[in-house]
Length: 180
Length: 355
Image (tube, rainbow over all chains, first blue to last red; front, side, top):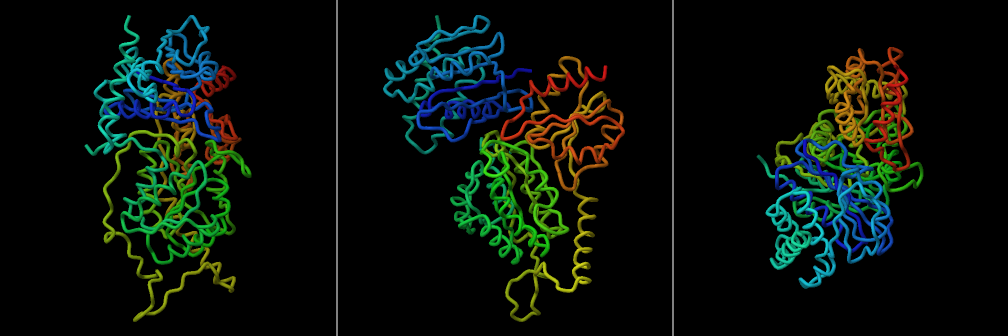
């Protein structure tokens, strides 16, 4: 059975929840099972938010995890919280524009993406979440690019196509950025 | 196949209620349930329904009481502290034998508690909560898809038996998203008319009386015995549960709702390690599947009941199993959700004790 268990974490406002929703929706488009579970609570503005996404070929039992296979961290508090919890052999995707600190784990794969800078270059720093999602997808192949586009259209349906276009450009730029 | 939609649990249950023919909603927002109220505020006017945000849950439940007297499908949703405020009204509704659906998206308690997921309102939902000899049917969905289906069924059960039905969800089910296939919209004309008893204006007919009151104890006893006859029918006809991996299992896990779903992951991992363990998941918490549970676990070495509380359903599990085999318990409370790793660890500890 193929299963992805991802925790995505960052400051409120970095689009972490949306990243997770788009990923889980794209998995649905791919005819897979998926769950999206947000952290929720009395958070202060700029506080850290995270969500857990599970994607599976089978019915999903637990939408909650203490030890994700994969983590996306968009800020330092998220790195401190989740680096140690990743399963051995797992994947850590770091937004190196914000996280100016080296991870310590040697038993996981680490991918750094200058997500804010790439998003700024594309014209909108708010697309940094899609840049880092693109990098994550290039590594894991968890869902297809076409499905992400469909998920974005579902989410932004009725609004300007330019929003979907910008997000897709950001997604591809993120995938491109980690090709060495 | 019908289209799948990625949807939040609270919103999914609200949409399911509308599709089941609910056009009346009274409620008061409370985390982690508020999206339910918000969704109804937006959606009910679109389908010709009425949404009313009351000044408190005491008021909301009495609006439900009044609306239910008309025989129309009505629902309210809340979370622990609000559900407590509704208990007096629920007792009146049970006594007056009125169809109605309550959704409790349970959070950590007691008191103000917190806003994280919990199952610690089990006693309140299944053992009364309000005063008097009454029961409400209690349905515990494990996934959003199941929640959608049970909301649909809840209205039918409420209509069939003239009883309040509770959907006992939790903060996780309310807040998470997963793909859902919604059912068709019910034709409102096809629903029970309840014209034999409902209050619709008595012009050109004898008046109806809806009440939970009778000053004569012998008459009130008769009313109570009528409720009990109804409960017997519900017990005979409406019990729901799910089992998985039980046939060859040495050990049985028991859990409901979100916890039951998480136990599915525990079983998958345990089986990968060669541990033969199965799951019994009650779906109706009242009526509780005593006989089915007893039979399902009869040949097992022990039962491990896992809850998001300090142990409430465990009392019913023990009633079902008796002294025939050990019943262990593991729970987290206050809004902490047990993860599969820790439950697997506990399971292995209990197995070590047997060896």
